[in-house]
Image (cartoon, rainbow, N blue to C red; front, side, top):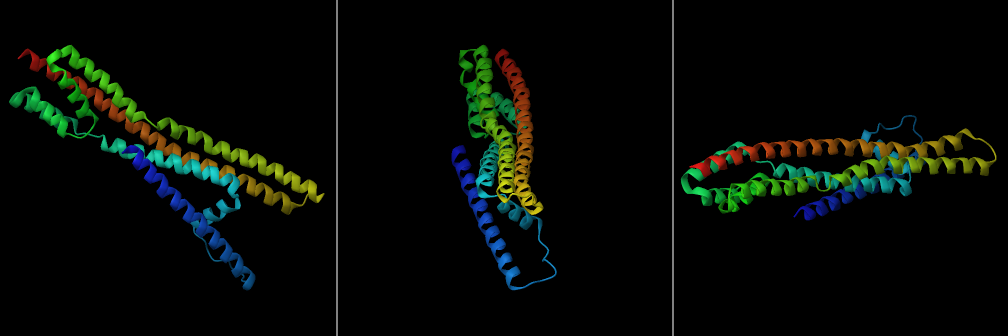
Length: 255
């Protein structure tokens, strides 16, 4: 299910990105045609989105396409993690009270049924512990600890890929800048003269890759920090609730 969500997000984001590039190319082409056909003293005001699309096209597809791919894949993984972690949230206080009531009314089997019917990793951890109640309270504790580690691994799954894209985007931008500067100096050598126009255009195009690489890295870094804080919050809540659950099981065993 998680892979399906990630694939759908990647497909959707790639479609939106492709449409944005095509529309930006059309807008640039129509603007050039209009400027040739009609000479106007004032240029029409452009929005920030239109400005970014034009700058993206000016940077060239060779270096801008890899940077765009890092944004697409990083954003898809980040959105999948955010959705997964949001769905993993559980009202732990309500769950603990429900388990306590279930143990008082129907015993362990009633508590198992409640955990099966409750969404979220915390309920799954409690269910694994209740499954081993007949083997003793120590086995219950081992099951809670072991399955808690498994759930923690699932929460942190894929986060390392986001950090990879955060590091990769500016590096691709810097690489494009270096190559662009080399090309600018090649143009100067071919022209045999240091023309301000040749130098300015070459450097501008070269620096655009760095700008977009840094923008992608900053955006993904914000999402990465949000995901990390979400994971830490869920793990902390899960540990606190597990302690309360084990205290409840110890009391129930002594009755």
